[in-house]
Length: 331
Image (tube, rainbow, N blue to C red; front, side):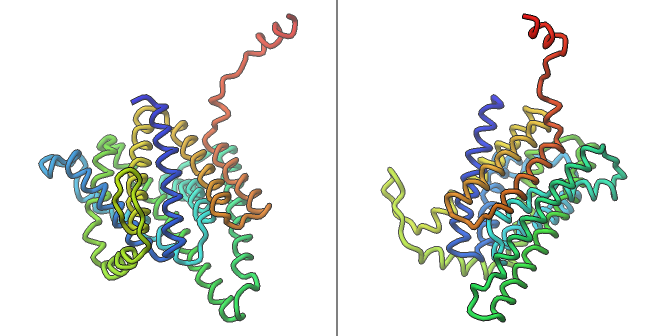
């Protein structure tokens, strides 16, 4: 597939996925479990048919390693989605998750004994400062005197603080999973499709622990206002439509990223994903009218400047030799 088409899949799939997730979270803030379950189920069924050939194809990487990876992946997915139920706004959610570079570098230094260049450390300082500014400004909004009582305001803030803790925990577990995957791929080779399938199929029994919550939200979704599907003329509850579109766009997003990793250098993949996050953030602010101050913009720009500095994207821009510049000036 042409890389340009893969980039189009990433931008269309991932950006629209964030929109449908916010539509779901705004109506039912605690719907993270049913969203995660639907995404896992859809990708697992697709992988069972096309990747594992209905269970006949044996995995290249031993299943015991997938169990370890799946435990981390399942935890990250559930915690990230559940954080939206803890007074975490969608823009802050996206900004915080953009700080994965910090967690990756810290764990890389501790576990893999890696050392980085000065520009890498500078980029991490920018990302950390940006996230700190956005988090601090969001904290002030949460504790603003808009609550009916001081006690209610304190309760809201404590739930928000728990949400920040959940996002931090998920960030660190995600970084640890990345390091674990890196060591596996060095030993067994890259098998992204296989990993995608097992990462979504093996955790499915774990959703039994969340079954009551998933069932309650499925009932609430069924009671939402009816929506007529364009062209088809079929009616369905609008929340089920949002969930269906969220699952489909999530799959398009993942497939686009997978194609990019096989067709393009890792620098290109990081740059595309970073730009996609930035566009999703801007759309969320403008379309959903999420509160966003000047300080939020400053923090956001620091995060994305730090990310681009970390990828050393500047070094990939073709430069005109100084000799050619001098000759051009003479002409």
